[in-house]
Image (cartoon, rainbow, N blue to C red):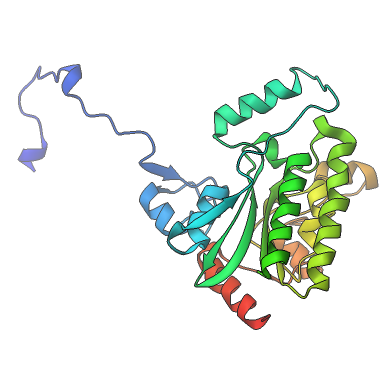
Length: 280
């Protein structure tokens, strides 16, 4: 191993010749703490190759995974939130929206589009947690409603991918109204006999869980996803008791009958296609 041992003393490498490892090449799993190449993470549908932990991703990644060749037409691309209540906390609501838009490159907490999934036509609406915690405001509700309208008009199945902290407090009652609006639109979808599949990812909570996320013909989830209404700390303090192990995990919710099945993200596209073929 003499080639590996530096024999001469005092050899210094100029700073400009030192090679730094570029940011983003390696990924450390937050669950098992093992390291993998980010290319492996992407090939494995953004899940850990060691422990199958599902990394939290947004609409860009889901559209890439589901739509054939990542080809789709996005709906309502320019819709943004107003400020009907002139809400201010640590900053004005419009300022918070603009800051989130600059940080994420998104207009709001949901994107929708239509295309083919394994050559099956589908409309997909996907929430982005990076935008104000994936909170459901008037834009999110309206874009879901319009995506459902497109499904109704063209008789195409509708897939909803939820990942949200719940209602957007800065819009108060306007946000809560989206629960009723989206639920009413889904009732029309049901009357027309058009399939609706709801995919719950980590986390799906609050008013989203209490409305469209749990109204699917099939309610499915990713492994380990947190699913619930109020957070476990609030529930624990309310009932004054310790909660069961893995409370509000997808596995716990499945065991108690609120989900149809749990699907690994690598299998998601094929499982969804099989469901839609079955529902024809």
